[in-house]
Amino acid sequence: MCKLDDHVAVAVAGINSDANLLINSARLFAQRYTAGYSEPVPIEQLVHHLCDQKQGYTQFGGLRPFGVSFLFAGWDKSSGFQLYQSDPSGNYAGWTVGSTSFILFSVFF
Image 1 (cartoon, one colour):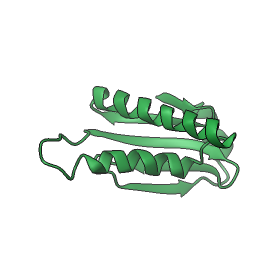
Image 2: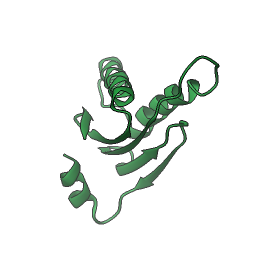
Image 3: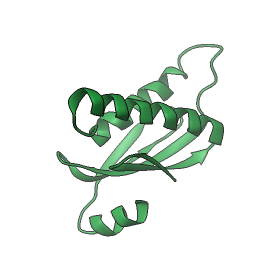
Image 4: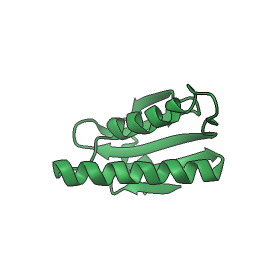
């Protein structure tokens, strides 16, 4: 479990060194977004950016794809509580969390 920003956390499954590289990239992206727009990055935009980076490594010869899957959980003011899953190929799926939102959020943070 890692905290990416004040409003989003991620659970990791796979190669830890790949996960560390991608987590640092996501933290940097979130900080740049906050510095530029004076508000936290939307969860889906953060996930989309990270998955674009993962998918790019599957397109070219000589680059090893990242061997890591993520489970993102967080909250933003536009969509509320959200849960996203990404796989090593860069595909992701998201769910909006319902009535158990507070329980899930307190487990991740």
